[in-house]
Length: 227
Ligand code: C5P
Image (tube, rainbow, N blue to C red; front, side):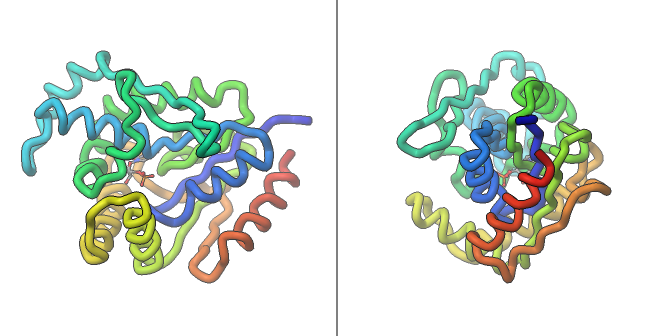
């Protein structure tokens, strides 16, 4: 059986990771959450004083990039990999609203992107990977056999992210979450380096009207057809 690369891009909280995890499980592939990598760099920058209020010390952070190690370790109980930043499990911390409010500005930095894209390409070099993010089909794996571009209305997305944050025990209001989702989408689509956009050969999926099960079935059929 031939192994393929599945690239899933789209706006925030469009259900990319839910779908990616389901596909990886069904196909026996590795799931890579690239947003977690940008979030972990952001957490590092916050914890080391490179972000103070609105100001980012970009030069200072760039100099420290070689000291940042990221790892994904599979957690059998959860059924997916959790991210470690310099040997610490930061899976919970990186989902906070504070990190969410800064991450898109850190993701604008070309040196940060270059480092992470390189690591992502290594993780997928043997195929058999489902990777989700903003630039997977356009930059990381332009030759991926299956590319999906996910969309949903901002309100649907804010509602989802809000529920998810509550379930995980994070404090944030619905309005804060909606504002964050809209701001990140703006920055992500307007940045100079690797802006979020649909690859020409990506299949667009608007899941506002689809259940998680319907969406999964539809995409699993596409993946099987590409095998
Ligand atoms: O996927 P998630 O919402 O966790 O991503 C957080 C942020 O990381 C995005 O809003 C975007 O700014 C950045 N990101 C990126 N490129 C990726 C994945 C995430 O710029 N491939």
